[in-house]
Image (cartoon, rainbow, N blue to C red; front, side, top):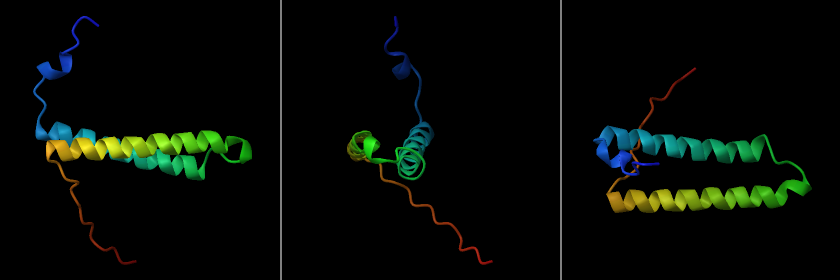
Length: 84
């Protein structure tokens, strides 16, 4: 990697940051759901499941701390109530 500062040479807008944040939180939520519902069942996989959960907890903690440092707050999007 000759040019390690390639990311800083681009102009990152607020929209870019918001898209990256949403992608991160989407990935974390899906990872948690996949771990719980689809994979890692059985007694022999409990240690791996715990390690993955700890890692995801660390990712959540780190992401929140970065958001606080940047002065970002999660945007709450209200969805309309759908009646069937």
